[in-house]
Image 1: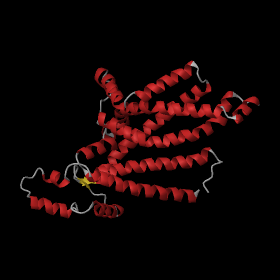
Image 2: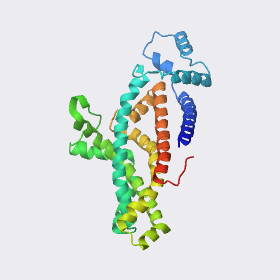
Image 3: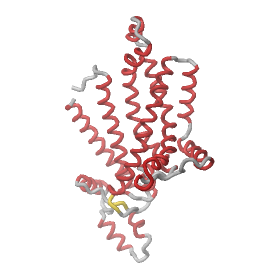
Image 4: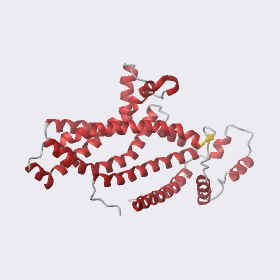
Length: 317
């Protein structure tokens, strides 16, 4: 297991290094010169001053050389300054990351708590009324666009009923934990409704496939109870493909959070990436996108480790 873990960590670092170069190159193709934006509010800066600034920040060098300089500084712990906030990137990134972890963590837990029992019960009685109802709701959740669902929830619960805040976030020190949670309800509900349908469909399909296996028929023939067959013999094997989907879904949730956080003006990583790209804040957007990549890689690594726990036949020697 230790050898496998080291191998996967090495692979993840390699993928992260490649992605850092790709994202750096794509960010360099963004329209708008950062020096022109920096000095746009100062009419006294001449073209010679702008040329000296480009030389100072290395913007007049080839992109490979600029990437090498950035990577060397990043490995030394210097992730640069945010042009928009005039602060080091880690200081801007940390509070947004905490807010996004609250949002994604709550969404993932709630989605699993709904999708698991719904998918298992639908698979236990396939093509029944309950199964058709679950499938109908799942397809409805998959089909509804995230931005439309978010706007609908704002219209109903914030504008018409006035029960929940339409956007932003609360501060724990000033208003308490419950007040902060109130700001999370609508964004979490939007992301959960958008993702729980897909999770339910995967759980149902995996359970139906496992319930058709010979060893399940054998257990039933021996008189093993229905609940014992479902939860002791079938669920553990059915969870292997489900774990894969949940791990890969971290990336989807992060991209969904970008739209949701923008709609609800929620100060998380998604909204910060959007604002950084629109404001040509190169350093902030680059580090935030790399962190999103790191989150997806970590999810895949956790999924691989979960396989061995769910199925002892899988060996990582």
